[in-house]
Every structure is written in C-alpha cells, then in structure tokens.
Length: 171
Image (tube, rainbow, N blue to C red):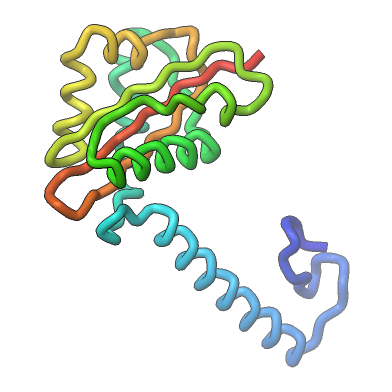
C-alpha cells in the first residue's frame, strides 16, 4: 500500500488496470490541488498575502547566520511554524506586538527549553535584521541549546507585517 493514506498504484502491492490508473491519477491531481489550497490558506496573512516563502527563507537564513557563528543548524519544524503563525495572526488582529502567554502550554509536552522572538515592521527582512541587531533576540537566534525553530509572518493588510520566531529544545 502507498504511505500516508495515498491511493495505491499498480506495482505497490495492488494490481491496477488502465481505468484504475486513470482514477488514481485523477485522485493524485485532486489531492495535489487540495494540498496547494491548504498550504496557501495556512500561509496567507490577514490581508491574504502569501508569506510562507518569507517564513521558510527566514528559517534558512537563521541557519546561515548560525553556521557563520560556528553553531549547528536548527531543525525546521512544521508544528513550530504553525504556532509562530498563529501568534503572528493574534498580534496582527490586535494591532500590537506581544508574546504568546500560552506558548508553554501549546508546545509539545516534551519541551525543555523555549524562546520566542516577536516583531512588527514593514517587511520580513526588516524584522529579521532588527532581531539580529537586538542583543536579547540575537542571543535566542544563536543559542546552541535550541534544536528546532518555526517562523510565522502575517501581513496585517495595512502596511505592517507581524513576525514570530519560536525556538525549542525537547528532551
């Protein structure tokens, strides 16, 4: 059987014929379209602008910054991206930067260390560079005790973006 609940295809443990393969192909196309719609919906900010590319680019740039400092990379965790994005959405809705007071409860139960950077600004890279320039935020970004990261960026629709970076170590 195919993994992850995907429809089986010929050669993966179940016989198929041309008509069955056509159904499987249509199923795969539909599943791919649904996945794209879901991905766009979860990365769209308050104004509907897609910020997912910036989120991933910021996480990768963070790992480049860490490498230049001789520190190992952080794993990019989808669940942390979801938490960071939700925090950024709350900030955008409130129109103010704030830390997530529920973060410790929302992280996986096995976390042993966490931190959160939050910011508002005209674009993702202005906020990223502001974190680098801030000693406390920079410390989180280069802390070798963290092992994973998630980034959430939301366009508030009024020229302001909100960003959250969640760091975690599990044990």
